[in-house]
Image (tube, rainbow, N blue to C red; front, top):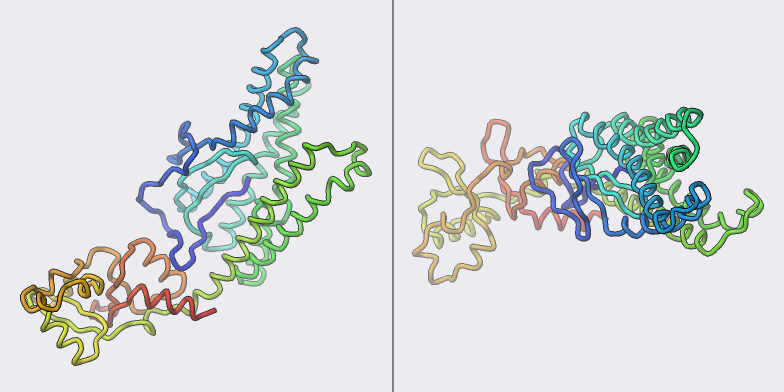
Length: 392
């Protein structure tokens, strides 16, 4: 049940809280909210709930004979109870992340358990550690709590439910501490390597390879199951092992790709990518503005207010779409975008901070300014993308 932070690449998610509405994933159903985060159930959950109901029904029939078809209802109730404890696991991730200042867009229950969608990446190793470790610890606490209730729980379906919670939560808690991404234990390992080496990139790579090794170990499990636990694997065991192994391998591989991309971000520095800029009055004819820009070899045009303050940025696409014969008769302001919040960036910005800035306010051009607010140049998104591609 890994918490799932968004990994910003050239156009990734913001590291800071966002006020933008979250788009619900297709095939999901909202059933409530926890601490302001939507609780979603994916369509795959209903499949696994039905599967649990069918598998538990024979056990229910042994514990409480004579229920007939109601044994499947009891099995479905057990599935709901089990996923209630999964929800506690995910809610603990969400609450700690929110306490640390991150936006948590949703908690989703699905076939393999749950996922908490946290916008942004931890800024320090201890944040990564706290968000990751609290989930498994919550599951272990629930399991131990259920274990403490077992001696005073009456026989029957209630005892069956308590014992199921003990086994499921202790198993989930312990297995999630396995040191490999995308498991919580992988993020714990990442935070420890990050803290020791000072490199989040190295921490991610080590934890991702831990995830790949775990995926291989899971795939091998049916071959040694009989020798370890004394029972032969059946078809369901092989199917579950294949699904879990694919989940782990895919998540670990995605983490490696993300780490590779993030290692290239420091080369993105706004100062070195800035275009020479021409400042003109907003009512200047567009043809004249273009002529002046060509004369001084400017790659960007900024419009000014009457008192000389930056007002807007000429949109290159809008400029090129304006026919030559119309340019002498329309003002520059007709192809500019007003300098709203987020379109002014400090000239010293770079790396992940630059990526977060242009992601939170999507645009084709940004105005780079000095600390005193004076104009340095214009930053074009296409130049950032090109620099990122060339940094391989």
